[in-house]
Image 1 (spheres, rainbow, N blue to C red):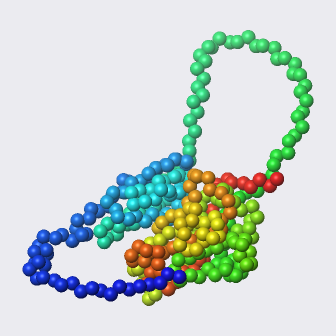
Image 2 (image 1 turned 90 degrees about the vertical axis):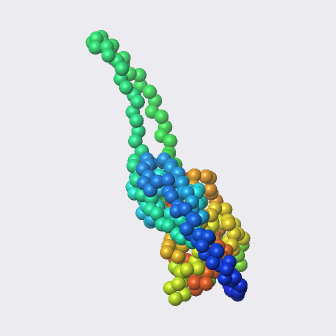
Image 3 (image 1 turned 120 degrees about the vertical axis):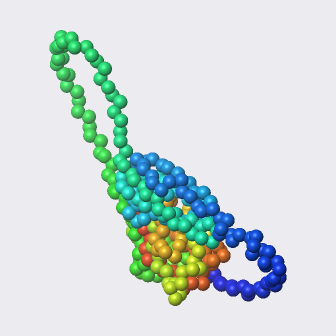
Length: 316
């Protein structure tokens, strides 16, 4: 568990004449900071297409996607300089960009419209001969042997896998944390081995899933959220990495006090194997991995592995 340390304020000797000069010549930091700009706030895409939205003048950007939009688009390469949007299926999505500049924060919305992919038929009939052709006699068909039918391999549709707070409790696993969380889902080397994913589906493999969504509940002290300054979630393939502080094998930034649901996209790269757990890490006011002073605790309410569209398990 992270510990908190408060630094003692140091006194400053102020020379009156110097202060008068500085007050007349030094501009506040916020006055110098240029306001962040998005390259666009409206994006139109066809299914399968990608587009990058860029950002100028931001010290830090937190990207988030509304719940309905997570089925429509995915976000990757998120940074203070921009984000890449990939269209998954037809629909509407809203992306929020919270951009820090100086000591201020600017929030902007990006509206994304995705349409179905259209196919272009290039087969054109250019035959302009209007002469009536002499019909050719139809030959008598020769009987061909009927091929032996081949049995089609049976398949099973891949569906979302959901692990709830109750599932953690039934497995004897604590889902309540003081700050940074190491959420173990499988550990075959534990004194009492467990695998919550296998309990949900015995064919679990990350290659069949496109993302994982973590839903949390914060316990703020006196409703003060000021010192929760961000953080990240990271997915680990080995139980030894699920410590609450490791980057893991896949991670993303963007934890904020005004959200309780976070999605980690796996992207287009090959990503397969069992998942051992997830790290949920918070930042304090110094942008360090520590429990913010305003936070009394975190509860993991639900973890959902979102199936890839049309994915099927082979059953043979």
